Image 1 (cartoon, rainbow, N blue to C red):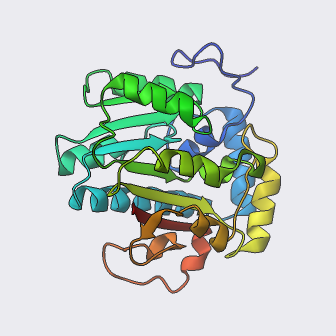
Image 2: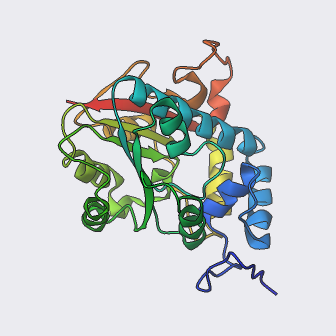
Image 3: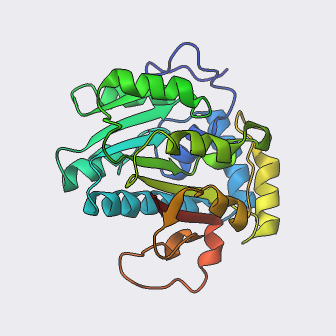
Length: 268
């Protein structure tokens, strides 16, 4: 029998694995079900570094948000935010600058329900239940919150999510739609799985994820870099996760095992 817990929205099919809940499991979270854990274990057999990759991706998010705060960004739009775990965008940004405002966007029911619970008393942060690939609906919802002022720079975050957007939905065009509504001086932080670094493991992961609600579409470094059209890449450009401004300055000689390219760009 599929699990049914008190915090699970009635409409959630707990027997169908979701990427958000698999990621939660890989990060050590508790908002996942037996089906998610079973598929996550297959993911781990395909990519034994999956837990490390999940942590590296979360660490990149932290470094990117802190960089944006350092350059003066005070409002963030986190697209495909997932299930809240330790080190959420609002926690990072508001600790560094208490006036920071954050709007999360996700369509996964558990991610939204849990986010609403933890954000109940935070009047500077909210979550919208929308699909990031529908920018018109997302932006209408964002404007309705009153938290984002589009006449000021915005930090757009698409961290570990665009590899779930199929080519026919034009992920580059989706990013461009958000780019076009933010002012110059806004930023885009992006990370996405690639087949360039570990092609055999990535092919196995893609095969595993076909059994979930969220098939995966890895992209080349060139394709990922193209998503920064209209942005000036900040140093060091589009690189494997651990190489994007590591906090200790150390260079991981085997950074390619991360399997994900990441970068940050400033709108021209």
